[in-house]
Image: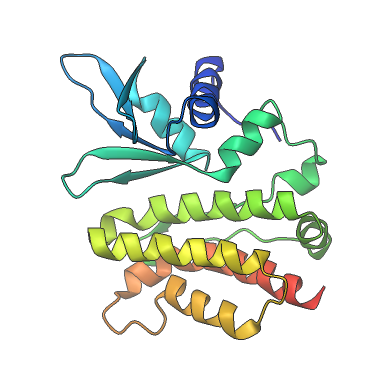
Length: 225
């Protein structure tokens, strides 16, 4: 698949990845725009990066290449994901066949008002090919995770969002373990779905379920391969 980014957006993401690898920039970039100028602040060395518009970063985030978040003070921040490095290294091309590379989260209807109108699906053959390629599997989980976080970030407090992001990182780590256990995945899925959270609204649960169902399909095939 090709990422739906403009030439400038690809150039911008490449610059951020290059800075992380070669200029001691971290993976987090803060929005320090002021006076009509759009500026990202590379952490932790506080180097200013002048960009055309923050909307470019928002588009990159919607592609699952960075995670859009906010600090305690309400400042926007963007965090590079592994998918960003993979995209830059592959010149923004996933060389898998189209049927394998366009899986991701395919919401075929809208999730609104707590009512799931339609959910995409994955073919068993597609799942098998993805889970047998660690890099592709990691990229798919990154993309689903980024879209999931973006979907519910306004529904969670800062602490809840931070804990949710940590759970997603636990999920990624679980896939990389040499000896995966079903119990470990079950605990993670329980947290991601809010099923056992008596304080979570049904509207919130309905928002995350389409994404969690995709993740469950991967986990099921991964454990039985």
